[in-house]
Image (cartoon, rainbow, N blue to C red; front, top):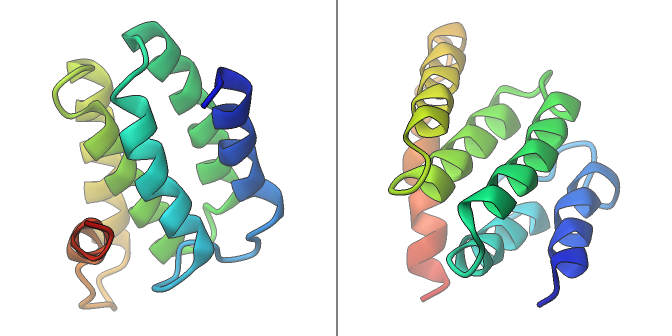
Length: 120
């Protein structure tokens, strides 16, 4: 897949799957699982650029705790063994979201990890 195709897949999250693309079973989640595989084959510099785009997607869904939390989890996964500083930032973002959502007992990390199991 070309860099333009990857960018298109990310940017589609702002358009095609609104307003809540990352609810359980949402098409946006499947796209992010696919992006994980694609990101394994890009340089760290390119990954940073793609993450900048994903951050914009996250801003567009900042009013939805579920979407915001899941985007942060995916970004943690994308950066886990490659971009230490950025990974720490996504972990903090996720923790802050969970603190703000004390009214829910959902485990957003588990929901995202289950997608990887489902897609294997």
